[in-house]
Image (cartoon, rainbow, N blue to C red; front, top):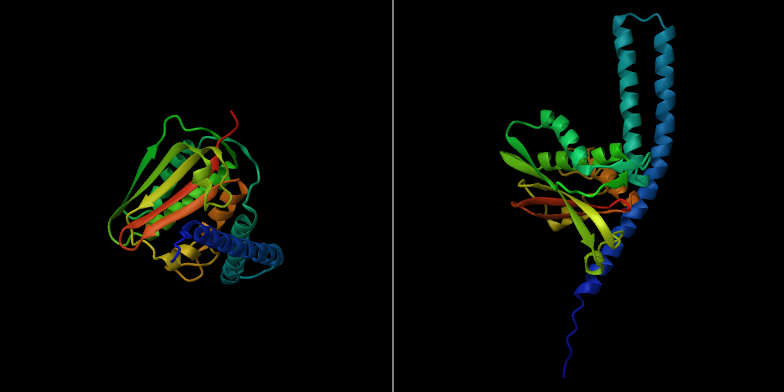
Length: 254
């Protein structure tokens, strides 16, 4: 005699808990580092500005001093991205039309995409509004679309879509943080290189990047923002096929 038991669901649940625990630990570490880092950069930037006002340096010296200030400013912005990952960057919320956020953000980003990459949209005309920080929603669209652009080596296409979805109990299984009820879904799809399972498991970790050393805060920040807005973000990818990122955000109360 023998018995066979399907443990697929328990394995998926176990993996989801492990990933969530690792992300929470990473967020705690990122929060502490970001606060200390930002405090240090405030001192550097402030003193550089005071020196510029008081010094009698020549043009070359002033240029070097301003370079120090610019680097300190960039470092401070980097710290803010780490905080966005750690606490979600939920600052000022209001009723937001995600379709308008997508249009505005892509209009600006198209200028930075190489001509070989085309962008298309498929936006639901009756999309439900959400309660969110519009600046942080733009950050999500920007991070996901830039990541998609970097995944395309030659010619390719990025599709950004929105739709309404009623999340049921079955849909929440294996998706920690996703609650039942009306949501909107933002999808960013590309036909780039795609990712193997190992890369997918780490894609939202700060500073993890397969492209450029020292990069990788964009998706981490997006992850933190989505989580703090009560949503869920997932990735589906296959090497040589492309990647699909899906962001679920609760619809505003009707």
